[in-house]
Image (cartoon, rainbow, N blue to C red):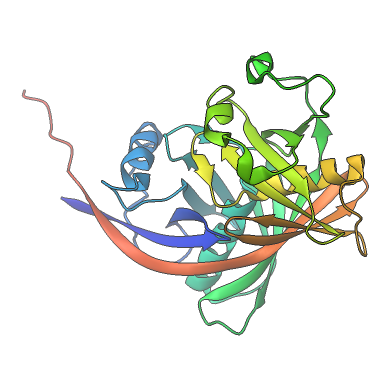
Length: 281
């Protein structure tokens, strides 16, 4: 029986299990795990009641100074990018290496740079990530199933992963589970203006995870849409996005955005993995 070591972090209630390989001389057991096994491990480890519980599994490897991050959602599907995930990932690396230097992390959506700052809490950091350029997407397949009024605006946006943002009068009055399950292949954000003039309130149904307390890429998409529609007025180029798990700050500079919020180290856990049984000769 071998053992895999995982560290758990959360960013605004969006929680992740992080596996690291090659960042120091410590063997966390991940070097021998085949890529085809990772989806199943994600499903088992992220399960809320029969596993450790998380919104996703982040696999990090460093080879020759190059850092890569691969994300598996809680359902085992692979995702291109996560704004809160990459911030948690950078925090995990900082704890492992003891360095708060800027990190360039390669993802399926391209390279992203994360900046870390200390806070008053020993297990917490303030993490800012350059999220790159936000681009438009075509209407996703099956969008008509939501039955949204054609007069209600909608923004289909990409931050490396797909988002659909819809403004509503009251985010708490919407059956987001029912809507999200009709378009499970996209991240669905509903937003309302305020309560501050430079803020919006958002709820999200994430692809591969369902309802989550926060979504970093979703917060960026929501801020861009809110700015476009005049639902909120940026202050010094920044909008606040309030989510169930906390508040993120989104910087808007033309088509490019940054995401800032706290990340917290939760704990470290080891999970047993049965050794492969060789076939009979």
